[in-house]
Length: 341
Image 1: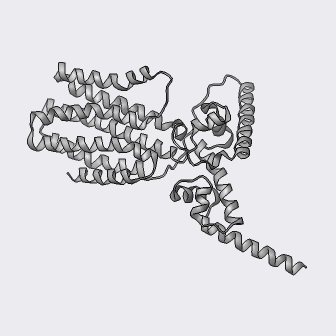
Image 2: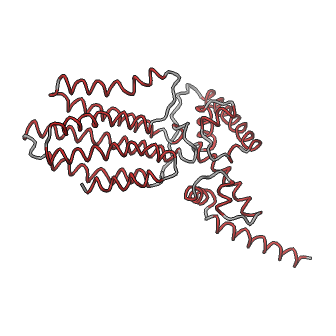
Image 3: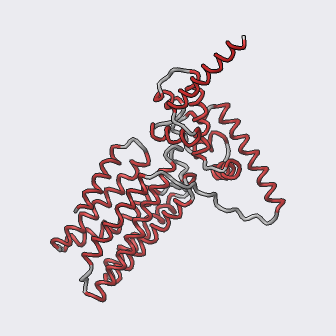
């Protein structure tokens, strides 16, 4: 119940957040909390109805995580729905028709969806083309946290099934408690901590040096054209800018934008756009007396934490420190000119 209480506090924090990717995670975290509650009630009372309800929620949770945290639009909705629901329906059918294999089917379901989410998160923030660029890194972390949760839960189910098979479930309560104690801190860390290492672009198979050179030239030209369009139309000032929206505005496919930026600028699209926003913020800090919060909003940022983090990453100091240093430099230059005259 202690683990459940912590998860409920995390759910409350996420629910009150203004971030779109946090709001998408609310339903998944609510499902996790419900599953933990049912598990606790089942071990306490062992009612048949609780066991059935727990099995149903357990089957629904992986596709729910996929629906909430995986973001890859497809022109074929029917195919997407089949991929989303077919494994869960199959696992539920096994649970009803052949209960002896239910644990194996459930573990396979969790490991399958968990692995898929982990693979998506490894592609970095550029894989989440419908998320705002300021939220895309967080969306990748949330997908990683959910994938880790599902994989760990699948392995725990296997361990419990083995315990029931060999030891009549004597160690099952301890396994459940240990898994909850181990798992929750990792979920919190995956959500709270910033990304320490940028995602590397997917390797592209090229047969010879001439093609490598041609691709590099093409990427450089494409990136230069994109930057010219960004500056001319000030697209980076849109706080709701997404990779998909940027692709529509520039007429360049999202995957080409991501590849060109990765190859020529050595960063992901979110960091690339933030460099333009920070340059604009620097100009405002030097030339105006506007409050830092107003500068943040006029530069395309939604949250102060993201603005301060990106400003420090790019400039090496906080916005307040930068404004103070710029004022000191301006005063020093003025004194130098007066002395020279």
